[in-house]
Image (cartoon, rainbow, N blue to C red; front, side):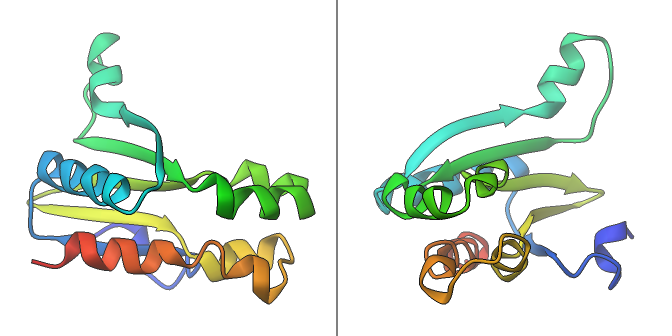
Length: 134
């Protein structure tokens, strides 16, 4: 069990993928490309740990977004750029693959976004639903 299984972090969403970490990352990047979004970076944090002689469970951070959606948010609230582009963490938790990200409602509340601007970031829910579906 992890901290993310408790109610202590309601601003974090975690979903289970039935695929491996590598397969889930590949599927997410394909979904991002298919939806016309921009893939900014895929960071294999476990590989980076290995490079310095450390061991870390499979952990990959995918950074992506839509400049058309994110730019108005950052223009209205410059500090929103701390949370944009969007990020999804795909990680191994024993024999399960977890998909974790900041809840868009929490991001909207943190940055006091209007409903119109908040609508620009809620798509991450549907994207990750598609990711974890069979």
